[in-house]
Picture 1 (cartoon, rainbow, N blue to C red):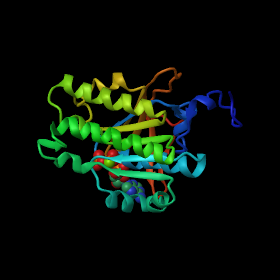
Picture 2 (cartoon, rainbow, N blue to C red):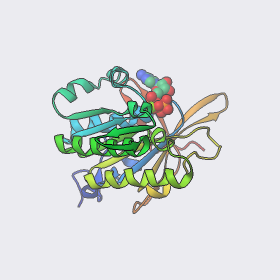
Picture 3 (tube, protein in one colour):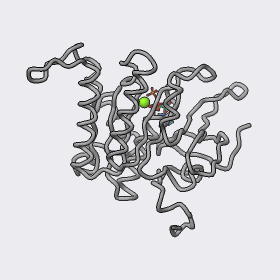
Length: 254
Ligand SMILES: Nc1ncnc2c1ncn2[C@@H]1O[C@H](COP(=O)(O)OP(=O)(O)OP(=O)(O)O)[C@@H](O)[C@H]1O
Ligand SMILES: [Mg+2]
């Protein structure tokens, strides 16, 4: 069904509301799916994810859950306030739940749950999934961000175990019915990806990179894969300003 802007995909899309990005995504992220946002350090993964949730709340009346696995709540709240996004206020008004899940990394190797002893990995994944489900129910969240999944997945040794952990998380996210954005850290551009296989599990992949152009660095965003979407998979420039991320969907970089 087309919306007022003539977008034929409107009913199957969740608009990010990020200037220029929905154009690349033919209307937005595919609804009820999990999309991977991959990028190196400082490419704007946290800013983009936050902007996606805030726009959902303010412009589309969709509440959101933010799962932070690396950074603590206060830090993220302070940083996002720089862009005018008052996470504390949104949380007070039950529009947003911020889950600070970083402490699960510091759990002891074994944990006693009643009379049982459970391994840290099993405990942390199960706990996290439970926390997410409870939070989604509590505010009726339609958008979820997990930032970044890398930390969680690398607790597991070996590709098979890491893949299983990711499948478990992805299935739990799919069960919520929300449209989910999960971030992963891309170590160094041009080098082998740290978690190649994850791309096969996600419904789509968005890549953030910094390219060296002459002496300066250019930020580029690329929709690498998006099932059932006619793709503009060209890298397009984006910038980070005081108001967040802006994508230039018609400008080419090559
Ligand atoms: N007001 C601003 N104007 C321009 N650039 C900014 C502004 N605030 C932050 N940045 C840039 O945003 C980037 C940090 O964004 P963000 O924290 O979202 O990155 P990230 O990909 O999540 O990084 P990490 O891998 O460390 O978690 C930095 O490169 C910083 O220079
Ligand atoms: Mg970050």
